Image (cartoon, rainbow, N blue to C red):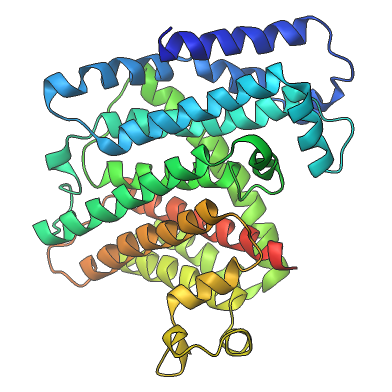
Length: 368
């Protein structure tokens, strides 16, 4: 059985369970897009991704990252299969979430959202020839090679994270959105930014579907981010909104404003949730400090100190490496005379920063 046929068989099984009248389906009211989410497994985007992957070798645009995304998707679908077929696993997850009403259909719907994000990422990556990586901007070949290496490490860490949820670890996926839901969004948003700095977008049914999904994700993450920023420090909202206002303005200096705002917000939030004085209390190792200031690596280890899942910790490390590499290149570009970022590139940068900040803030909640 091919991968697509396997995915489709699991989709059919989930729908059959629902039609059988599984008790207490009131939770579906909390998932108005439930049918769309599950149906995404059978969507044109999924089929297009499978077709593109089948032709990658022949047209010499093979993307290791796209194959990693596809492999991660397969693991997610296998997980849905295990939950659909194993009530013991569903009960274990329910106990983890302190809920006795959650069903394996609800769990499957949560996983399906990650599948949708990963499918979009795989589809996008399958369209990017390796030699075009980062070529839409005036980056040097060395910068492009470094960016490519960083993104490949990030992709490997995402696949490893998804593959790590087996057996007893499966319940970890539902302890917090930081284990599965938000990493899949991080992977997608990073891929979207890579796309707009590598190739031009295309029009058609698939692109419309992609825009629909990414718009829904953007609205959800934006609302949640504003809530968390307000509870942390309302002044951060001003920086966040300042970048958006600059984007909508005709100010010739708006690109520089957006880049600086995105970088500063990411940096300040990380220092807020991993403050210098607390890290000094937490660690006395000289390797954790440079000129008496905590290193970024030390801040991250402090941030995820209560997370007992090594693949997630590694993903967080690679995630911040990937986003900071992109922010650094964009910021450097604002000082170049011939730098000219498009509105599409600027919007993708803002969305990337937004999803990353939300991820960091949700991680910090594991320490409260």
